[in-house]
Length: 68
Image (cartoon, rainbow, N blue to C red):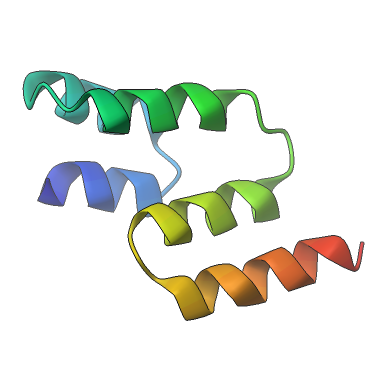
């Protein structure tokens, strides 16, 4: 899980996906699939923060992305 989390925080979706596949973590793979369809980097970071249970950071990122 540590590799997947670190890869997500660095926006390295391919490494994160491989880590989730190796762990048979279907929810993680689904998250990666959703993230690949998001173009806005701020929204990606917010979704990742939420998935990693960093809710304060996610809130700030969502608010920041809404102001653009």
